[in-house]
Amino acid sequence: MRNRLAGACWLLAAVSFLVANVVVGLAWEQPRFSWAEHNISDLGNVTCGVWDSSRPRPVCSPWHPLMNAVFVGAGLLLALGALLAHRALRPGRAATVTVASAAAAGSGYVLAGLHPADVDENLHVLGALLVFALGNAALLAAALGRSPLLRELRTVSALLGLLGLAGTVLFLSRVDAGIGVGGMKRVAVFPLFAWVTVTGLRLLRSRRSRPLS
Image 1: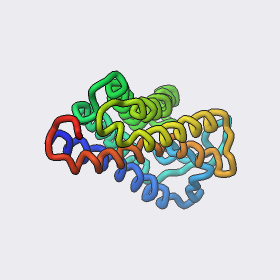
Image 2: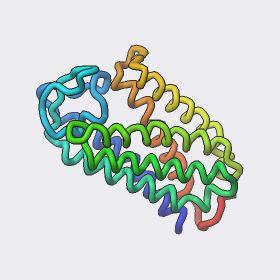
Image 3: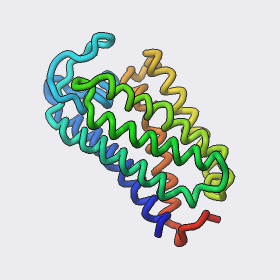
Image 4: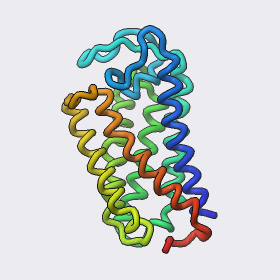
């Protein structure tokens, strides 16, 4: 039961986050939302206008309350899922790092949702850094795990972790690689949600709240 609840939390977090990115983006009119130009955070900005002096872009998100609510909700679900999945991911330090890092990344989303970028940029950036650094650290740690479940997902964890790490470095360096800086931010962020989707589906198939074998 514990494993299934963890899997359900992670799947709901991933689905709600992706759906909100699409739906809230579609609500934009002037300007139209661009996954290449705009950051995910722009969906949560509460005011309309030109935003970000280092990379100026027009931002106007009519459904920002929904996006910020999803930031908070998805973050809580990520953290709760990580804590519930601990038994299935252990033993070993790598499993502990995976759980702690995933939970901290979830707290980063909560922080970002409670403090939109145009309301409190410092706290929002702190939340984003937790997502970038610890979200991808969770995947790389998972690739080193010794439990049956983590060994089964080792290749997926390593590839997604390296992809997210590369996306983070390139995004922070403002290198768009042809997909826009906003697109690169998604390369940094989405691997965690891809991983919890794969892992969550595996957990949902389990029948007992002990390490999967």
